[in-house]
Image (cartoon, rainbow, N blue to C red; front, side, top):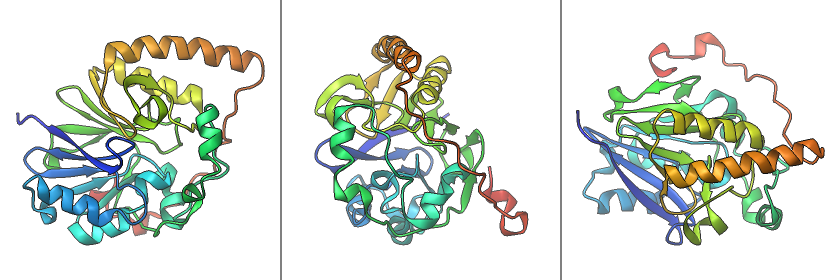
Length: 265
């Protein structure tokens, strides 16, 4: 079994927004940053000694503009197919996130006013439609795409056989990565309790080190302690009727005759 290496690719600042390069028998990229960052990610892949055209797959963790914004551009530059969960197809197909954003605290309320989070990305149609747990061995790494709904309905993470979890916005570092190693909510969640349940499931499945979209890696012991406190906090908000959750969207219709069964998981 070849160990999967996890290499962060900074898209904004040192850790404010991260994409990831996963190296095994073949390289896989997780997330594609903000609009206009495709070339930066492409060049960072090459700087690590990897031919960008060898990338076997681009996995999108969810349909927020800072994670899928350059997916269409990066797919053209690498020639790699894009994988995305069916529940976030609407943002991918339209290039627009579901609005309004639902802030998790003061940082989210401030960031929701940022015009850059409301721009339209280049739309794309993921070639690999994720519906459930998806083995990535055929794409060259010993890992699985794991549905982790809550941040958005179609959020996913990538769990390697060694316990590394590329977690998207399942959790973050405080202040968008400015306080390294300190677990925190990202600025927004569509379903905070659902997200926390997804996080707990990943920990129970053996995630030991969490590589996040905003910040540096987090160790599982510290995340568990944070999650216990967060469970109590969310319970109080729910009891007080102050916990906001986005209503479920109607299912996205994906006709069977448009699917390649080998490209649908």
